[in-house]
Amino acid sequence: MKNKTMFYCTACGNELPKWAGQCPACKAWNTIVEQPAESKRRPANSPAGGQRTGVSRPRPIAEVECTTELRFETGMRELDRVLGGGAVQGSLVLVGGAPGIGKSTLMLQICDNLCRFAKVLYVSGEESERQIKLRADRLHVRGEGLYLQAETNLEEVVESVRELNPDVLIVDSIQTLYNGDLSTAPGSIGQVKDCTMALMQLAKGQGVTVFVIGHVNKEGSIAGPKVLEHMVDCVLYFEGEQQNSYRILRAAKNRFGATNEIGVFEMGDSGLREVPNPSEMLLSGRPQDTPGTCVTCVMEGVRPVLAEVQALLAPTSFNVPRRTANGFDFNRTNLLLAVLEKRGGLMVSSCDAYINVIGGLFLDEPAADLAMVIAMASSFRDKPVPGDLAAIGEVGLTGELRSVNALGQRLSEVHRLGFTKCLVPARSGGKVDVPDGLQLIKVRNIREALAALL
Ligand code: TYD
Ligand code: MG
Image (cartoon, rainbow, N blue to C red; front, side, top):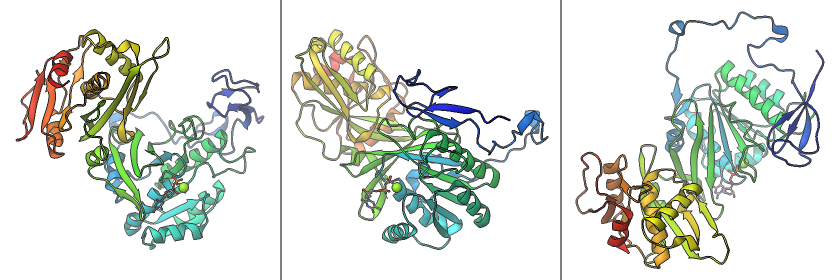
């Protein structure tokens, strides 16, 4: 068969049959690179030339045997939570994050527990064996059952796995791994895809659980575009700001569990420490008696978590006011500003509005609406919201407040962190247990909410 050549855009992953100066999909210039269309390795069960191997045949679903997936705990409860209750044997987990955020540290730290019951192979193309050993010592990682290999050649890694037969394989990072059969450089899209495919075959074929580290580039996607997400079982992103020590781990995809859980860590002198109590962390350093901030409670998976939302509204000096939203949906921000103007009677359309959610959380739950509206109004009127007050509720287009789910759990979290008042929708569905010492302020719409507070 003729070895056909394909071309890829390194910016967006778009495939083209011939070279072009500009990518037709993302319009980037000089990003198209050549890539052999097929590598020597074929995906399992797909023979060349269309002959059938007899391995796979359609089967009635009733005849398919299934045992529930075998899981094991990594020993990091926050990681296990995000994975949906531990790692699934024979799965491939991609751990993405910006360089220096702590991916290698996290992986090395879980080795400490994994080594107790499993054979672990840690392959690194980024650091020497000595460097990893020094770091492992500093992180107090026990050594038995942990094997290190500094290697970047895919074939060597596959061979080592065959020889050593580990239960867990950690690859740091996918961008440094390369397949010598391809002519392109390590880290290019073709290489990254091909190597991931090979690791996937190791996972499925030999039942090795594989953790793959992938650096996220400036645009926020792994290896340029999100080329790997569809191939792997689970995609975790490790996020945080370089200037503060908190890190949030979230699942973008999980074939074996939900994707709405987050894991929270703190980076310290001796590595990552789990933060079982994220609310406290997210509220630390909260300004007192300052306009433009309000606390709410969102559900991250099954956990209620308190979050601080901030708004800065200032008269605009542009024809069209500037608006930015960080940690909150941009369209929802505009919608809430419009509701605030039309139903709350505040002339916010002549204001620039800057929205921020503290601590790297992204609030995609409508329950955060009320707190956002209050933060906006507080900034607009330059009046602070009482420091011991939290607000929970969805805001509708007529300015009405709608009830939210799991209100009881949210209220107990609000109470646990020392808040004494909570603004809630007047008609909250079902019977709700209100903790002693927490005063509920029930409001029907945002006008009532503003009247009660500001
Ligand atoms: P690392 O795990 O190497 O990041 P990644 O693999 O995602 O690129 O983490 C590197 C950063 O973490 C580095 O800036 C130093 C910091 N760090 C600590 O603060 N404490 C520690 O115990 C360790 C191991 C790293
Ligand atoms: Mg690293």
